[in-house]
Image (cartoon, rainbow, N blue to C red; front, side, top):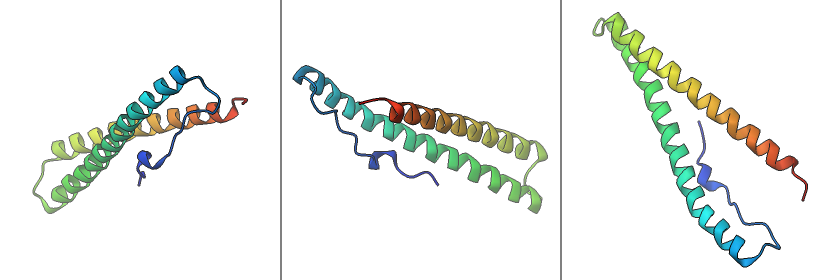
Length: 102
């Protein structure tokens, strides 16, 4: 499962001027919102996957239509693909930042 992104402790770089530092600190507040957005997106992804699983089980019991199962599974698949694409972009961005010279 995806852990909370808010656990990352991001601090501004040393040796920056005051105006830039204050804008970075404002960015830290925005980063908190970004972490919240990622956490909510991860929760929604897990929710859709659990819903698809539940609908599939209901279909096995004879309580759900095949169409409902296909809709739920396709929705879960699209959501999972989007989550994987976002994860890949975050990893790529992290690797690029880690390669920057100081």
